[in-house]
Every structure is written in C-alpha cells, then in structure tokens.
View (cartoon, rainbow, N blue to C red):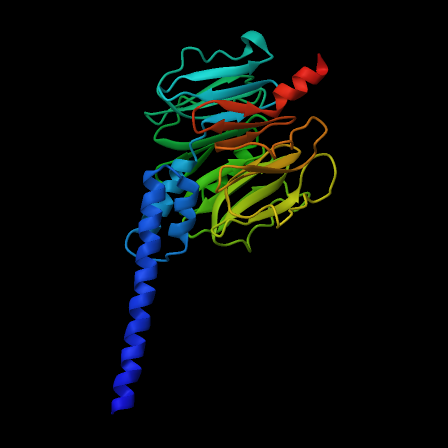
Length: 331
C-alpha cells in the first residue's frame, strides 16, 4: 500500500511540474505577444496544443502577421506608415504608381508592375498595370489579407475564402473554392499556397519544379511563394522549401547551422530571407547584387525581398536595403 501511495505521489508531482512548465510557456507567449514579438509568440502557442486559448491566439496572430508593412521589387519599395498612409521609398516608374492619397491601409503588396493595399474596411486598392484585370477589385469585401505577383491578386476574407483577381482566376478559382480553414495565402503568380488553421498547407497551380509538393508539411506557421518555389516556416523555427528559385532548377540550400530560430520568412524571386528571433537576418540564393549581404543587420522586425533587393524594417521604424549599396555601385 505504501508503495502505491509513493507511486501516485510521484505521478502527481510530475503532472504538476508539466502543468507548471506549460503555464510558464503560455505566460512567456503572452509577454512576447504584448511586446509585439508576434513570430516568437506564434511559435510558443503552436507548441501548447489546446492549452487555454493558445491555439486561438496562434491563429489570430498568424492572421495579423499576414499584414505586410514593407514590400520591395525591381521598380519600387514601399513602406506602410503607422497612420495608414503608404510611402514610396524607391519608385523607378515615376507616375506609374500613385499611392500618395491612400489612407487607412493595413497591409501592402507589390510585384514591380502593381502595388496593392488592403484597407481597414476590408476593401482593396490596386494601382499599376491592369492587363489581366488585376486592378478590378471593387467587388472585394471583408478582406483580411492580400498578395499580388505577376498580374495575379489573391485575397483572403474573414471567412477563410480566397478570391483570385487577374491572371489564372478562372482556372484556379474553382480549386481554391474547395479549400477550408485557410488563415493565410500567398502566390507566385503561377501557383497559390494557403496555410490552414491546422498547420497544413494547400497548393494549386504550376508544379513544374515541385513548388506545389507541400502536402506532407505540418506544424507550419507561415508560408510564402515566388517564382518556382514555396517556403514554409515551422513552429520550431526551421524552414522548409519546395521547388527551386530563379532561372535554374537548383534547390536553395538551407544551412541549418544558420537557419534556426527563424520567426519570419520572405520568398524573393531568386533568394530567400529569414528573420531570426534575435532581430538578425539570414539570406540564401542569388547574390549577384548583394541581396544576401545582410549579416550585419540588427534590430530588424520585418523583412521582404524583391528581384535584386532585400529590405528590412528596424524597431525604430527606419529601414535597411541592400539595393542602396547596389545603386551606389552602379553610379
């Protein structure tokens, strides 16, 4: 009898320790969330299964992280200001992009020929080329996230439904209409990837280089897509890649000694970028224009990559861009 009591006591103590550890991790997640370290908070909540409201908080933060504050491309770089206005940091096409009058914007997306802005009321503004009808967004309502690349705009609404505007809309809309529990979406212009609330990934479109081979992925907290590849961030801060970037079929090599503790990812055309928990940045892929020269960056809170550029927003609201160094080299 005494042995049974001791056994139950040991089990009870172990359970208390486990519960305390879970509780402590939950509190750390809440602190990270309060400090706006959303990537850290998402990964903590992802590992807490169904403890308290951790999963709901994870989903809400993933949706929040869909709101992009900075975008860069070959022809422009844009930053979303705290007052909801948009600033063109670089605009090589002059009058082609007119965003000076935009107000109440909550997220931006750009691909070089278009700039799209998600407004606080759930509507979408798009300027630039309209050859595929990608600027015709008056019918969009209740939108929570957007992505635009190569004449294809994908818009996610509050019910988890995706609407495609522009290129390939008729071809892929019937497919995405069947998807459920979507909380995040990205496009390369040729394929579409969506993250579900279960941490799995859905895809459709061009699979020439295996960029849609993501059905085995799980525990994913962010996805992005560009050119011929898809990148996914797992809840433990590691990165998965399907397909290949750029003009070759080579798979982007991920050095696991550097690519760990990642909290945010960005799929550029020919290179991939990761933001680490400590505010530093890693990049891999084409580096002909110094787009991967980010080793000395610090205090970064958001990243984005274009064709020849990497850009980062710092805690103080200032920005760093590899394009600036490249521009100086060309002068």
